[in-house]
Image (cartoon, rainbow, N blue to C red):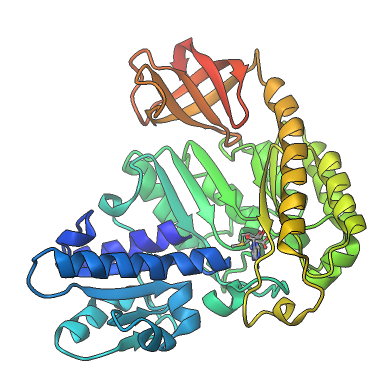
Length: 439
Ligand code: SAM
C-alpha cells in the first residue's frame, strides 16, 4: 500500500513539473512516506530525517531542502511532528496524496508548518503513470482503502480512515490499460480486499458472484491480464465463492493471504477479530478443498497482552493444522490510541522473543516440507531480474507467490517461463528452465 501511495505521489509531482531524484542530497524537497503499524517503523522515519538534515548541513549546498512527512505517521501525529522535529516543514496526511504539489508550493512560498490531514476530494485521480511504477511488469492496483474492522491491536483504522471502495469500472479500465502497456501481473491491494463494496455495481453487471469482491475478481480476470493476485483478505469476509472464482479463471493466481493473528479463541476475542479459530479453519478447509492447489500464507502476532503459554500453544497447534506456505510473524507492538494499548498484562519482551523464535522454527520445518514437495514439479514464473547471488541466475515469483531462481539461459525480465523445480531452499525454490519456455 505504501509503495502504491508513493507511486501516486510521484505521478502527481511529475504532472506538476517536478523531477524526481534518487538521492536526498540532490533534492530540493525530500518526502518521507511512513508506516505506523509497529513502533519500530515509526521510529525509523525520525532517525532518517535526522540523517538527511545532517547531510544537508554538511553538503555545502545552498539552502536546506524542504522536508515533508506523508503517510500514516503524518496522519496520526499531525502537528506534534513540527514541535518534536523542527526540521520538518510539511505534514501530508494519508488522504492528501493528490494535494502534495500545492502543499509544497505553499511551503516554498514561505508558509511555515504546512499541514493537510483532510479527506479525499471527489473525483480524485487514482491513476499512476507507468513511469512512476516500481516495476514495468508487476503493478499494484488499489481497490479499497481504509479499514472498518477496528482490531484492538491495530492502528490502521485511525491512520487510514474508513473503508472506501473504488469503482469497478475504474479498476477494470486501469487493468486493461496496464495490459496494453505490457504489464504481466497486477496485485489488487487493500487492507481488506474482500470487504470490497463499491457505491454502485457499475462495471460488475455482467459478472456473477456471491459478493462484490468475487464479481470483481471475475471482471478483472476477463480483461485477459495474465496474472492477477490480491492481498490482504480478511477472514470474516472470506466467502468460498472466492475459491470458486479461482477455479473458474486460471489467470487468478493460486495464492491467498489470510491473516489469522492467533490460534487462541480467548486472544482472538480480545483482539476483536470477529472470528473464532473454527470460523477460520472452515475458510482454510474451503481453500484446501479446492480443485487447484492454492498456496496459503498468514500473519500472526505473538505476545498480545495476556497471551498465556496455553494461548501460545493453541497458536502453534493452529499453525500445524494450517500448513502455511509462508508466515509473517510479528511481536506485539503497543500502538497508542488503540484499545489494546490500555490492556494490562503485557508479555515480557524476552518471552515475546522466545515465542517468536519457537513459532519461526515450527514454521520453517513445516515450510521445508511444503517447499520440498515442489521438487519435480513445474511452476510458471514471471522473470523479474538477475539474481543477487549469481549473475548466471534469474529470479522471479511463481503464480503461488514463491521466489523462484533458475539458470537464466538468456531469459529477460518480463518473460513468463516454465521452471522445473530441482531444489527447495528455506525461502525459495531453485530450478531449470523448461524447453519451450512460455507458460
Ligand atoms: N488488514 C489486514 C488484517 O488485519 O487482516 C492486515 C493489515 S496490517 C497492516 C499487517 C499485519 O501487521 C497484521 O496482519 C498484523 O499481523 C501486523 N500488526 C498490525 N498491528 C500490529 C501491532 N500492533 N503489533 C504487531 N503486529 C501488528
